[in-house]
Length: 285
Image (cartoon, rainbow, N blue to C red):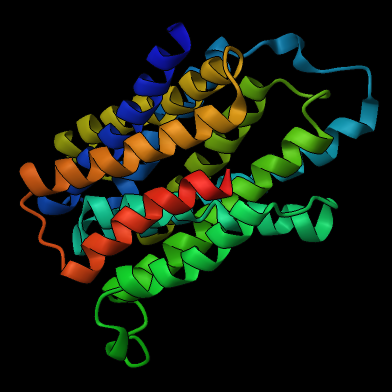
């Protein structure tokens, strides 16, 4: 029962992130400033509670782990920026669904590089993802002329999330015995914060509005909690059940939140895509 509570808390935290990003975009707040505050909050909290004894006696073996953390941090802030724009342009439900079906990327990497094999249901899920991509992306004819509009952001979100999840899988396979998860994520968030701060200094946009500080903190806290709750659930329940449950609840919750609160409007093909996304998630895990 406790495991399911952590699953619900993880999904709820993920939805809070999307909700506050939508608020940020609707109020015309500076996205980079909001994300920078978000990552400062997440990194400070993660490093504060991290197990500093997470280092082993592996010596130089720790160095590649931190290089990976820096790479993941760069990917995270870029993908968060894309996510923010996609939530504003495409709505919460579609953006969340696109993030969740990006599970296909680490699945394919596991097959190609880690020697894992696809079951028949997973193979069906892979094929289904390509259909979902076609259904969810709006204005497909306009993508060639306007690649960074609504449909373009969805594609970038799919790729970016997939790469980020794959990077975390690499950490779990090769480096988790060297560095604690909390410390690794702290470095990831700290790197993302440094990237955001550097961008603001370069653009001379360091003057924060009070609302940007508040929204940034309100994103940063669930940004950290969604991972911690997920880890707690994984310690109590089967991984396949945890991932499928969190993803399904997040997709369903994102759709409900988008329609009822933000009055998002979907095409009939996009409704079908969201429904198929839930099926694909079950098949891929």
